Image 1 (cartoon, rainbow, N blue to C red):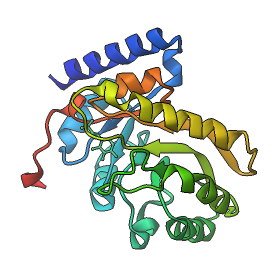
Image 2 (image 1 turned 135 degrees about the horizontal axis):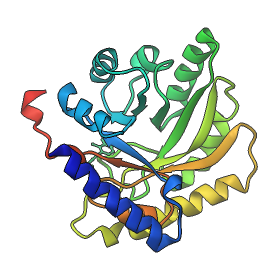
Image 3 (image 1 turned 135 degrees about the vertical axis):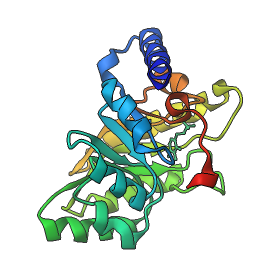
Image 4 (image 1 turned 180 degrees about the vertical axis):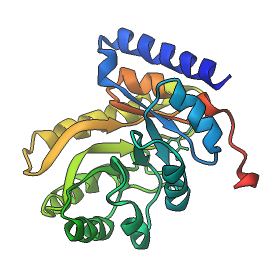
Length: 231
Ligand SMILES: *Cc1c(COP(=O)(O)O)cnc(C)c1O
């Protein structure tokens, strides 16, 4: 059942890549498994997925302990500073860095362990009040500040687009993120890559790929609806 969902998503990713003249290898599918039981994750793992996204530190750590070691775990949710220490050396990428204070804590914990932590800067491109992330205008300044911390490597940008019924409504936002990433790249800031653009969820990942996403975060489309009452 979940395998069929995955195949469907995979087909749509391939079609979107083709429409955009992009190679499938340019886009990483992150299976967003928050609230879902390990059995569901294992079904997707057995189908070949090795990249999972979670938004809560405790839940992620529990699942890490119970699942194979070759999985790359992505922290995609809002991260509290006091929890950074639990995941900093366990995650492949932190998508949700939206303040210098959070970056400083990641840097402290990274240096304690002698590692460099890859992160994305989260941009609230539609400037929705309910969402985390810096505004487009503040993003460049934040990137420059974080670039001074040598325990962190900035890999790119992440955004959560508004919830919409018609994914076309988000095309303009995705385009703006791509433009911002090019603007930042052109500034040639030391310690900053803009290789990653993490955007697109179940409702809009195809449009996101057409507009340049290199990582899409798909939950519902693979695992089905989430039941928050069980969490
Ligand atoms: C839950 C979540 C997703 C996945 O959302 P779906 O609509 O279920 O695909 C993607 N990104 C973030 C940051 C999330 O919290």
